[in-house]
Image (tube, rainbow, N blue to C red; front, side):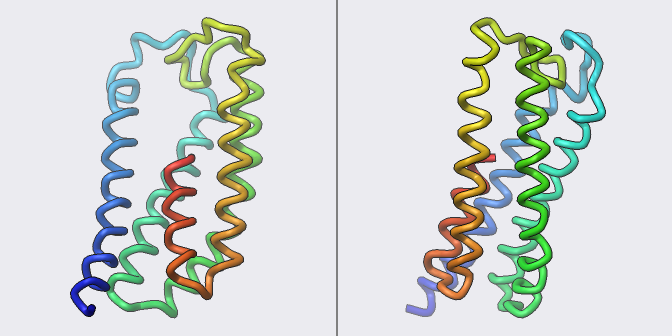
Length: 158
């Protein structure tokens, strides 16, 4: 039973590392070479990417804190980080609306080929899902078995 708990703790750190690697590999080409962009990077896109990166770092820190049994610090950081989620939702909404108005994403990498309003379905749906999962994760913060799964799924949505 003890081994099972140890493996579970390290699983979430592994998932945090995987998320960081996936985001890094996914966005590295557009960061390294800006020649394929339709427009320059906007301040809104920079703010969105910075906030998303901070969320990833906090997710990694939170999983590491629980794996190393520093639960009190994990709780304090979680209480502070819960205020980051609404900021991410508002910023995500602004990014999605601006993307639809421009006809391509704010990094200038992706052109919207279909109806711009149709392109809003996924981003806005993701924001609702993210907000619901984070709120549920906060609600179930005293039930670690539920809390950790909700926060992992919330991380994968954004």
